[in-house]
Image (cartoon, rainbow, N blue to C red):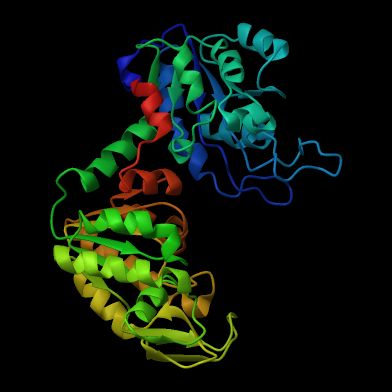
Length: 403
């Protein structure tokens, strides 16, 4: 059920958004991507004659409490999103310093058509992460309609992302435009993707991505692996990886993955060469060597030019691409080349007609750093949620709307 399928005219709409935005020391929003992502749904409701009550989390206030054990109501307040959202919408946005309770109910009761109100951080309440029914029911009483447009938290069974939906009948709960677009884009990868289909997977650990890799072996033609996780697979194949990041306890898992891929005719491409350093530092001594012959005392921090060339060839020949995870320590300028070159290749493949999805997390940071976010098919707003979808999992926040 999408937002266009329900009547919001004259109604109050409780909308879960993902306003978990980065803030500087002055509590100013430094990247408004997530605020802009929610605009189409908010504007649609206002245009159709509804009023919007926005709820979201911001940070992890329960894990970073003040010395007296209370939550930091300054650092983690959604008040900081009011000004930038007002500017983006071109209208006044109200804010209330609580999430549920009599004061919130009174404030909501006074709302008129066209009003926008932001509730305080849902995670100020421990009940949020527990998926507490009473807390969710209190939220539900604020509105006539519930809309979930927070894809980045759709994999969490929290009160505001999942439990609250059960208090709304069919026809009064729906997905927003952002979640709709995320699900449609994911389907292009899971439902008869155009081939060749190539997955580019990076990051630190095989253990973090093993479920994804095992699922991809069943669906793709090629898997390009970079980042620290590559060295566990290289070691499993008998390579010498020096002091590179290594999960010794995952060598058998790596071998199993390689065997499964071979049996299914899926090509796993590991970096032929690596940019190595004598310490984890941008100013370290640097060399480029065969990835299977890294000397003791040295560590692989990026893919080398030979690897870039061979990976590029595969990317450019692909019709469908999904990228999750950088090729090296791209935050350090001396080890960013591989990731930036892969970004270039994905853009070129897209220009040739391939469908390309950047699957959240560090890959989004990388494509933004490369200034190429507008040149790929789709950039996912939810790393964890997109990963779970690609792994074949069910997103509680999605299932709650469909139930």
